[in-house]
Length: 130
Ligand SMILES: [Zn+2]
Image (tube, rainbow, N blue to C red; front, side, top):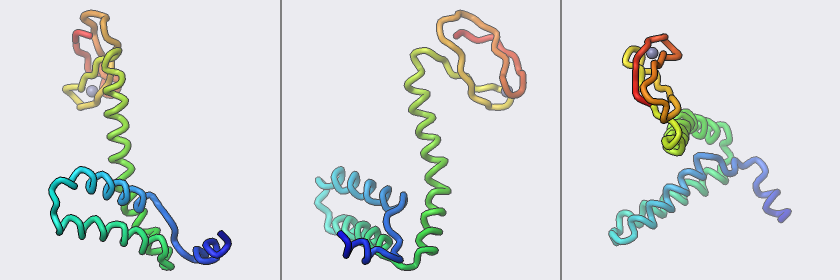
């Protein structure tokens, strides 16, 4: 493994962008297999080539910037998806409301009957069923 370590000195390596590209490539290639489309086949070869090129690239600052640009889009998206998942998991115990005044979303425990809810952000009060 020493030759590999020597070979990778000064090269960029793997980052989040590469991993996400590979995962997307894998999911798409499996789910679109039945289409039997030659153009798509080329597409699924190009993505791994891009990933390998980025991995062995010596232009580390450029690859780093690419990854940063990607993370600027990816991280908020990931956070949004995680929030949705958390919300779906807690739907059994909590009910979600959006404040009609400031659009803030908040949750109240289920099964408490009609309750008066005050928006934690703008203090707008409303009566809702929990
Ligand atoms: Zn509010």
